[in-house]
Image (tube, rainbow, N blue to C red; front, side, top):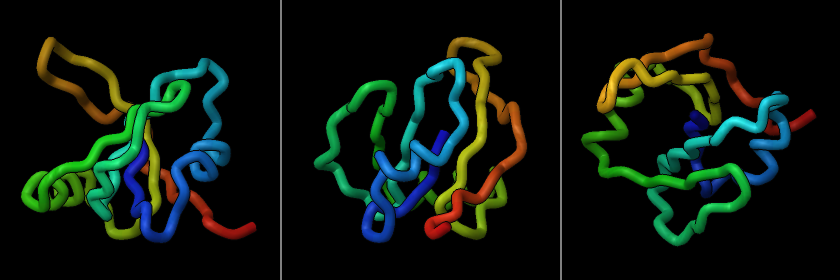
Length: 92
C-alpha cells in the first residue's frame, strides 16, 4: 500500500523507489483525491473521501507522505499491516 499526494508526487516514480521483488499488487491511495488515474501494471490507484483518509492516517499513524507498507488479508473483509511504514524519499 502506498499513501501519497498526486499534487506533489508521481505514482510511477514513487513505485520505482519501492522494493517489490515479488511483483505484488500496489494499492496507491491518493490523498489529493485525483480520480482520473487508471490501473497501470501492478498499480491499483484509489482515492477516498476525507473521512476515510483521516481514518487511514490515524489508524496507521501517518504523519508524512509519501509512505508505503505491506498489508495482508486476515479474512474476506479484513486486512492488517504486515510491515513497518517507510517514508519514500522524493529527492535523492
